[in-house]
Image (cartoon, rainbow, N blue to C red; front, side):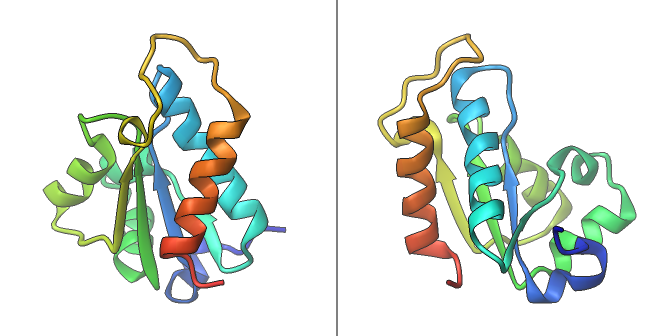
Length: 127
């Protein structure tokens, strides 16, 4: 059972990830799933709801113990949503700058997912 973000955001490292329709977006999403499943104090949250200015979701981002941003490509959509709303984040990564080419496919390599998840866990998560 995942922790309920709206009640426990202050005690969680909240992960906001790209879920774009390209390889790097799909990697970003899967990295967020992996980090949520393997780190008790981490929980992915819906960046789309934050972009839509859903009050509960914006509140989660504002109250997070730590806010971790996973962008798929140089567009940095996740970061820009937060910046537009004036919500600071603690850690940012761009999948396309991690040796992964952005291609117009939903296919991705799980080795890239595991490598990037390990990097984020080491650099950003409270383990």
